[in-house]
Length: 56
View (cartoon, rainbow, N blue to C red):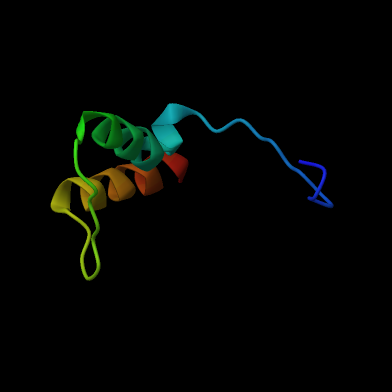
């Protein structure tokens, strides 16, 4: 971390960052590399909408 001029760490409740939680859980279950180039899967878009609703 010495290469960074500024570091900020903040707490974000899981209810407001479900996308990160779901992606991490998904990655743990996968055995192969997964790439989305055009559209995200529906389950991830739904998580994003839930994050937006929880934040506002």
